[in-house]
Length: 421
Image 1: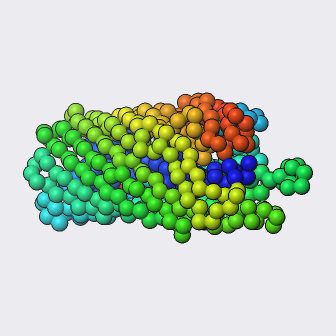
Image 2: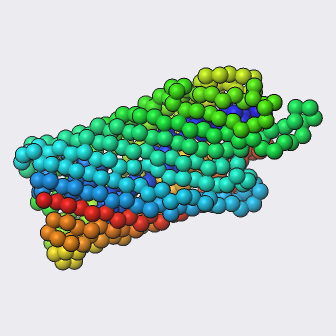
Image 3: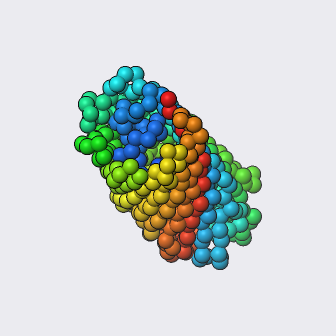
């Protein structure tokens, strides 16, 4: 039993590398969030570099700056083994900052810093799934230098380098038995913390066939994340008698993060109304399993793999902007987000679900150059009945594994400012 428990600990150690599903908040711009996260075919300001680097060269202003942040008010509920439980998550504010400059009429450069991934999941020390996860805190900071070039009035292209710093801190309980008589002892505990710098890129093409129509295409590369022994620490809190079986140490692993392809269309119906739609295709089928190599092996701690078997997904997004007057823009959006998670290998540290999101927002011009932006987004996942049926879960919870019903919802208010001159 101890051996299988330890193998599960390593699986969770890589959770921050798959956070794009369980911990993606997609809050990289207040205006775009107000329109349901559309952005591939929009060129509002410097924040465009995140959705489509090709749009940056089409900005009207020579200089553009955008910054803001969000509150993440999230809640997950579980009903099943041991009764009903819900998370008590901290509020971790994602932030963003973008700055861009038009070098000339055709060339633009920019730099962005933003946190597309970052959340907490706190189930508590004593809930029934504590042997899988008690709490986890994840954050990632992206730095993106970007260059964009406008070939003519209808075609612009761009590219950005993603320099990503991510870290994770998690805790979970470890069941222990008295070696003499097999009786249960008070739970032990394990803490896993790690950090990693990784690299990727995004490419964008921005088309303006007419004055009213924009078409955007962008591609984000797959990132092959490789954790060396020095990247993740494993620390056990157990009685001294267990130290030789559960030693502190390190683990190495490799995991592909999938590529994504994004297509967007925006149309200016008239002076008042702009409508836009995005579709995102994410190649999650690359995430088939996790394989781990422990630096220190014992009879209770050996190399392992765990099935995930995720599916490719598509997300559909729709948004509109209404220009009420010279100072005030109003936003609204709707999206449908399908989870890639497999219900047979479902883990409470990443409780994915098919989600529907709705958003409202506004921008108010304080001056000709400075605007205040605000939005609120609500998303809710469908109820999911799922099972964690990997060997570790089956060893602890029986042949059926850790099964139950999950429900997820979130409120995400945000505020920012934009300065163009």
